[in-house]
Amino acid sequence: MSKALSSRPENEGLRGGEIGRHGLWREVGWILGKDLRAERRAPTVVVVSLLQATLVVAACALAGDMAGRGELACAAIWVSVAFAGVHAASSAFAREQASGVLLLLRTGPMRGVSLFLGKAATVGLMTLVGGLAAAGLTALLIDSTGLGAWPWRLLGILVAGSVGFSVAGALVAPLLGLGAGREAMLALVLLPLGVPIIVSGARATAALYASPPALDVYRDSLGIVLGLDAVFLALGLWLFEPLIRRRG
Image (cartoon, rainbow, N blue to C red; front, side):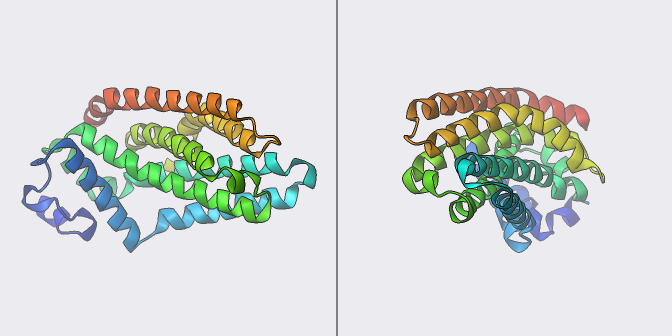
């Protein structure tokens, strides 16, 4: 069975004991590279994230008025981040669970922490794609103030928010198994965990859209998001391996 599984394109590298012979970051890079190659062949996560961002931004653009364009832009960006994070986390382990490769990775020579960090990197990157797409679309359709005046600060809060969603999603997603209601169940679990990130991220983004920009508010909110990232990362590193091995 393991030979059949390792011969599939998305599982390239399982054969011949390629994993487990290198250090932690080589294993993390292998997981991330495998996922990116699979996404390049069938870009479902990216396409869904872009569609969700487009629909959210378009809805906000049609629903708002000129008086609150900055608030609408912030809402559109962070709702898109939340949607992209849930979908990316739901898809992160789906291929491995459906094919049985996740069992091989769990019981093989790869460290559990490598699997967790590699999947978190995949989820974070896909979440960031959704957030960046939403930021670009809001600049075109709603308000370009934040992106035009503070692009690097906006990128910083989006990266920080994506990291928080990614580590929480990588911890929760493999515990839910497969099934028709998988993404709905993940949303019920992940979105409450992500609410502090969404609120603080939206607050930091709104500070960039304010006139004049409230950079002290931005820094405080960014600090809160980074603190949450650290908490979720510590919990993931501590809990992921025992939870996923107990689940079997």
